[in-house]
Length: 150
Picture (tube, rainbow, N blue to C red):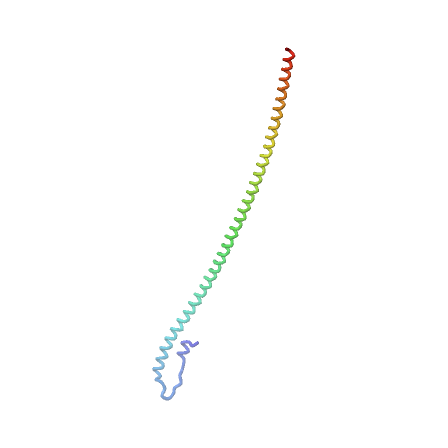
């Protein structure tokens, strides 16, 4: 790459009927001055581009980190949701088992109480029958005793 110093130090050969040396030197001085300014601006711009690229890499890294964090958060949320659903299903299943056990126990008690009730009815019937038989026997005895007295 050509530097401002290269332009400044450039020597041209003289030829027969060549250009006016003062005009060429004056023009080259202007070219050197303009080229030097452009050269410095170019260096500044390259430094600026390097800084911006460095910041861009930093922000891209941050973006990747945030994206990964978001993905992990979403996966964690899905896992929590799935675990909550499984836990809910387990609680419901346990409640259903307990409810069925309570119903079974209640049905067993109802059957037991029904059997006891039927047994009590049967015993009451037997008692009534015995009492009726006893009362009839007593009446028969009283009748027969009345008949004997007459």
